[in-house]
Image (cartoon, rainbow, N blue to C red; front, side, top):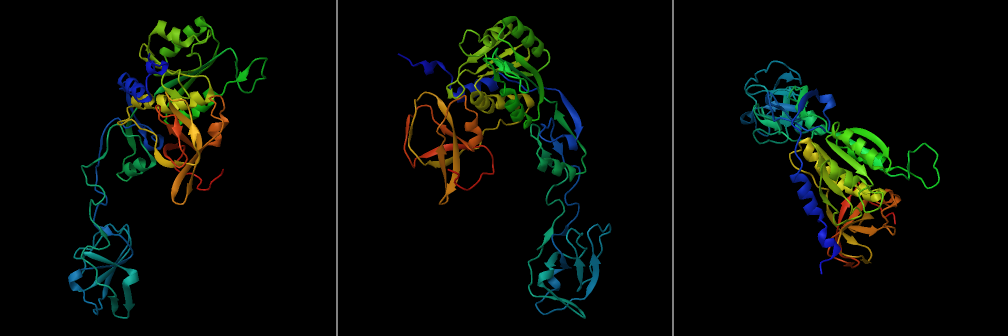
Length: 414
């Protein structure tokens, strides 16, 4: 008899399905570089100029022709060349030119000797080391050659990309328009932060956390607030969102409770392509479409909402945005500090603390793994990713961890 989890999609299959059913927006706009951070390039960018525009010195020192050098020769200094010099001067045979970093190499010179290897005297300069031809110089077009493709369509623009474009004298860039993501929380028990709680209420926190996660992706967020567990109200709000957003992300209302109406409403207005993914936390994840709007329904429990947004919603947004290659969280290997047992069947993202010890990464899962305990995420610095089929893990076993950040406290905070 098949298990209940055999009817659920694996994380890998869920990602494959969502990406196959999601298409990039085709509208683009041209914006200043100052506004382009984290946006997605809509076209290739071709270099209009060489960088550097001429062969120049890589450091302060003396420009020479290597064939003029011997260990004991003292060369007269014929000129000084500064960075920003507009005219490329000529180097008379048998002389050296004082030169600064970034200054154009004089005609007739083929090498720069760093000033640390120079001894100056009344009649010129001699050198303690005879360099190889071309040493300490940067050839014209060494970094970028005019006509090179310096940015490919589908690239998310990082600070380095913006610096690269600016080095070409470029001030604007064509990017795909911002994706509009609607956020909606459902549940009669929810109360907006800042208002007094009534009997049976809890504060709605998922929208705040998810908004912060999505801010890193450079999307435009439209808030629909808290919608009560009422079919007519849900139908009106989702219909409105379908004309205003590219993706609607709801929290809660996609499980099997009597008041979980979101999935049936989506089924009525559009289609639900799949429901339930074999991950923990986050099983009741729904994916579908209403008209041209993509729908992602994440669970209401805070940790479940947080994890499924990171693992399942983020790739969908990247595909909508036009990112050339869908990203995946960084995964590294670490040793478990303790043994653990769990029920198999779902890929498990346990909150944990990783630290360096004796040149190896080690990881300790936090004791409380409840999907309703958001403090388990704030206390952790990584996910411990446990494969669906495995139930027992031994201390010192190598396991997969997903760091929350690229910079991690190296001290064991246990």
